Image 1: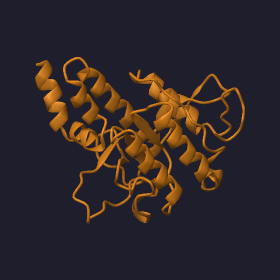
Image 2 (image 1 turned 90 degrees about the horizontal axis):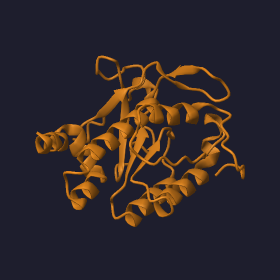
Image 3 (image 1 turned 45 degrees about the vertical axis):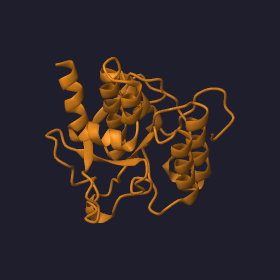
Length: 224
């Protein structure tokens, strides 16, 4: 969406790191990659690319989950419109995972993590499972929804142009891991639940149930 290159291009490294992290977790899904910006510095000027990628992912690629491992300090209407369109087109059977922030309590959740609708904000946790104060924004006390997060600190994965791995930290890393965990749970359930149940697992509400234990308990009980 950034250039017309026929070959994969990553001059930043962030996308390669997160994609190979998904592959390394043996994420049971077909993965589609959309390059929407050249670097974090040009993200603000790339909102049109982000919106086009969301529409393409829903309409042409028919995806169930979209990782938005980035965010904006203010609301972006064109991206909200694209998310709303994707939800309508997929009849709600699509969920977005978005990085909550990386600035600790210095600022709140970024957009689109704070959008609601079909978006689940993903926070960062330590290896011990507690929320990481260096990265996570304060909770929204006006919302009764639970907070979700997973490992984010010093996570190793591949880096473009090298034969080595590098570590990255932040909510963007946690976002990819959360998406992979979700697909694993649904794959585990795919032979035991009806098509309608599996469709509901792809909605925001369904993912909430998987993450809060209600859905996970149902899956484990069915296999018990």
